[in-house]
Length: 590
View 1 (spheres, rainbow, N blue to C red):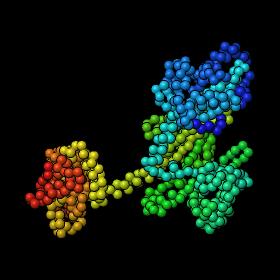
View 2: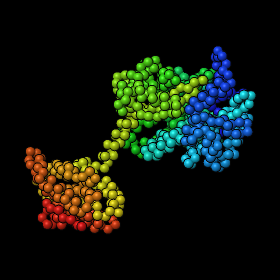
View 3: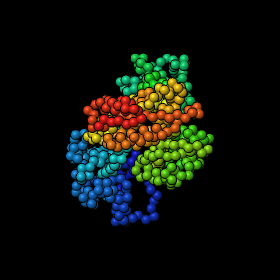
View 4: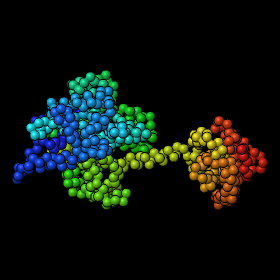
């Protein structure tokens, strides 16, 4: 179980101890009686959207709120209090017993005023409930108690798992590439970095990174300019303009090059401004570019340049601030224009048919309630140009209140890339003359279907056919006429096939069909319909009407042995027999 670092949390509704920040309220007109105060405290406790329970100095669980009952799907508060230790597994993921660790954390909260940690809860039926626990010591009627707040992490964990699976399927490198980060003060001193900076350059610790930073770049950048000169120039630009982004050549201390993308962002803190520098390792991306240069030029991968715009919402759903990238995304003049015309940056209705204003308000409410929400959204520029986007809303504390921060990721280039990839995939598996699948695609997919149909041997067939006297057409009318015939035959055959049937050009004037879930009788009827469709067709070329016939061989799955090749050979034998017996006919093996 890992201890989380302390961070801002809502003050207890039951009071405050010496280590807990106290909000000074306006002096009341009349102090409530003790009974009224207790009732008010009870109302406030039950109104807290987080599960809350109270511990006395003897580590006895003395009270809880209604949210605790709801979280664990219990009958009432007494059941929660009586069966509290059944709401955790016997052992936590660390291997230690839950009861031992619980008492240890409660003791810590009584001694230090606060404890925060991850915890594995469970429902009474054993369903796991991963949680974040915050224990706060508060004073009540001259004694200390500990208030425990439980934040349900299931949705976050599920979201993280869903994202991991998506990354695995699509193999998009950017989502898995770590970013190292360092910070520059106004005197251009490198004052801090994160652990990823140490990992990227294979250093011992953060201090080594800070001490040797300028050794982590070659003396000159690829453009011939001094690295130190360019670094200070870009940091100055970030301080002046708020942002700078550029490619950079880093290196390890042993001289191994690390091509990178650097993003410098000016951020404000209490004592002034700092510039945060984010370094994205491009080595793997560069290797991929070198290996697949032609493909990358076609699909114009945009991941290394995708910006995120950011805006802020208060509790009244007022858009109170934004960053520079918001203006860049929507081509606006300044922040005020973004804030004043925010709802002009979405169409009146979202693609689902609902009003954008209503949906935005619902999502912001959801973020305030649950802490986080992510969804797709249709934005637009003031000109009406659509901008499909992914929005992530996150609730954060600001001073003594909460705000919601909205991050917008532009999906336009990603949508276009997916469309282009789909087209490229189709080209890779399609015969460019006839539009049917090519032989490679057929042999791969039909063989898989063959193995899948192992348990139903009578319900699959192969139909192999070719165009009769095709050489005569080429010799008489030319190869362009032959190509026209091939295209026309493929189109007419495709019009006869069922949705599950797979047609491919097998070679020259020969075509092959895999008919799954089709008995021999059904396949023979299908083959006869194909034969008639071609025989009755009138093809034109150069103003001349051309007519052709085809010969077809049909093989039943039941007659094939364990190999897919034997299945095709049976159909080939039947086709040869159709040719030998006069052409323009159907023969079968089955």
